[in-house]
Image (cartoon, rainbow, N blue to C red):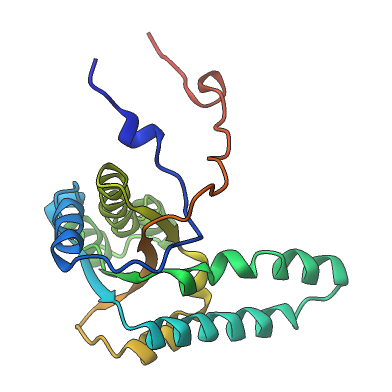
Length: 212
């Protein structure tokens, strides 16, 4: 059996050493990401790489401010505390030497055009789009990146939480490519010693069904 340690050893890292990552290693990880499968092979991803510490810190500030604004809208203390309890998870990329911002284009479906041309009801279109194919393509690419990083000895953290500040982040980054929007972020670096263990997974019997 093949050694799958690079899968089982991967975990989310939120504490990084102040160690620069060689550009050739970053490019190798991005190459791995682009070898992921994507629906209809549309390869709907684009990656913006930040190594500028000042910009990374500013992005963390943007996310923190957005998070706090949302928290102030909570109708009760319980919701407020629950919301604010994750703020450090959403801004942990502040400590990373590299931040990869993942953008996606819309997944184009000929089926949708055909159905729209025939005045299909919205509920039919909603079912067609419910698999969220664009997001699935991005998820596959990110997973390739994470696993390749583990194999190369790096730590990563995959984040979608900060996207509640999507528009502010996009404006700050200034990445302009027609039809592309921010989907997620990846913090990358050399992990600090003694980082928290990987949390447990659900047993297979809870998530797997065989149909013979």
